[in-house]
Image (cartoon, rainbow, N blue to C red; front, side, top):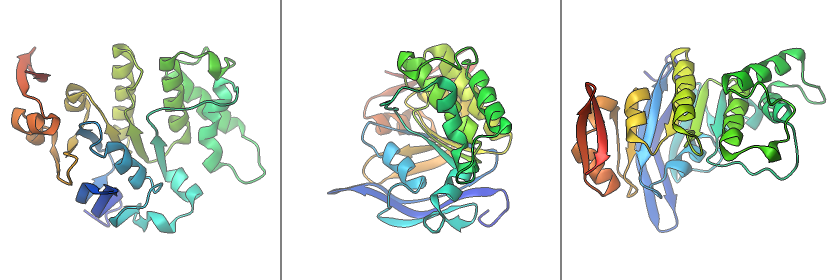
Length: 259
């Protein structure tokens, strides 16, 4: 419930739009510790813009966002970054840097001005790299990494940040099936440990496997939020993706595939 100590993120009457088009109209949801919410929708339906808005990096057309009970617009960016991490879809590297130094960027919100990283900061970065299977690459130049390795490094950076709210824009982007599963297991564990995770995904079946609730964005202002078992069905998904989606049973699980 809003105001509860366990409520980490509250969204009320949120409107996300682009010129001439409302993408999300009146979004309202409250997210408590332990929740993993998957955001699903077609390309251009507002998933990325909604995550940027929730992160306080884009002004909403209307509505409010409260982070830990405080209006996100009233917080300094360092205060936000201590509590909330955003994983963008892609990362551009302009200058060379090592893998370890890049992971350490996640500690910057926690470091006082004019101070250096502490041994504890280095330990957090190394642990995050180990979690993402990069513990043997500390001294590698990031410009030598493959697309999947660079994606895992970006994830290690947000893990190093140690927020209580993770906003993940297509976290499985560039990853092979093994690393897709391992990455979502990492964030499922983070949620089970008391964080909130909101992740945009293109794979319905990964959403069904890892998320507690799903937010469907239809791209015309309409949205649907509910437990995964309630909102993931042939009718809603066929409308969401503008293509027939069929439920099939495999090993006692329901999978959704384009018909």
